[in-house]
Length: 187
Image 1 (tube, rainbow, N blue to C red):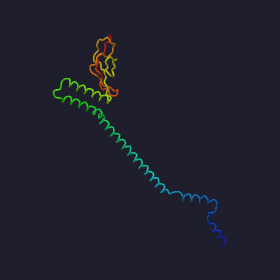
Image 2 (tube, rainbow, N blue to C red):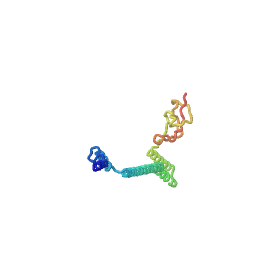
Image 3 (cartoon, helix red, strand yellow):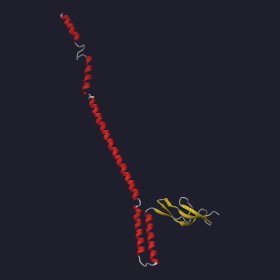
Image 4 (cartoon, rainbow, N blue to C red):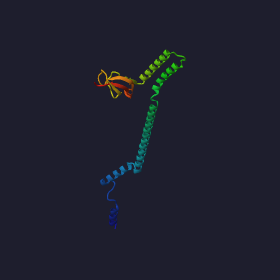
């Protein structure tokens, strides 16, 4: 029976031992599995990274909204106070008119001098603000700057401005009001 027992014990032993070369790969895989982070750890790290990116995105979105809001406020203020420079220049003109009219018993000459000074102040205010006169007497008619209200016989070339009824004005090259003119008729 002892032979049968030995044979039975051999049948119960594992086919290969840890020193067996076939089993070496199995040990290596087990070692690799032990050193890799667990799936739960990987998920936790991924969730932390996602939360960090979401926070950065929210901050960038908030900053963009703040920049947009500030830009709208700046545009609103620019539109609201765009005339401020011109208004300050007109205050000098108003002061000049008030001083002229405040003189009791002023002669016609004094009133004329006051009006002349006021006109000079107004011309300075226009110049500083980029407002130019359009006074096209003797120039060729330009429908972008002039409005012809009549054509008159003249010895000047056809379509030449021969009379200005009302000056026009341009702001930084853009026509605010065209000049009202009469042009020479073609003969």
